[in-house]
Image 1 (cartoon, rainbow, N blue to C red):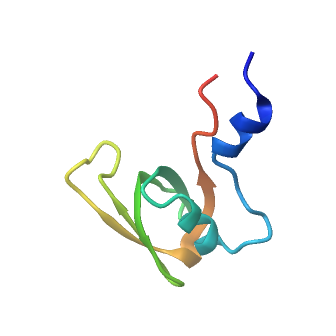
Image 2 (cartoon, rainbow, N blue to C red):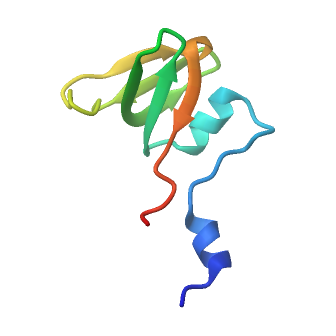
Length: 84
């Protein structure tokens, strides 16, 4: 049986009091999926985040591509929060 406090400490989580860019910074070097106001979505590794832009690298399905995404266009951040 696993200790839930230990499990929660290492599990990714969102910070609802933080901005979109601050939340993205918590997932630096992790894979995230962002859903944009256009209806499109992109998934990749968070390389860098600024106040206005997100740099995703190794896009899922396009591993040789990177993307620069406007923070203002992001509606949803999706992460893999658990394995089961």
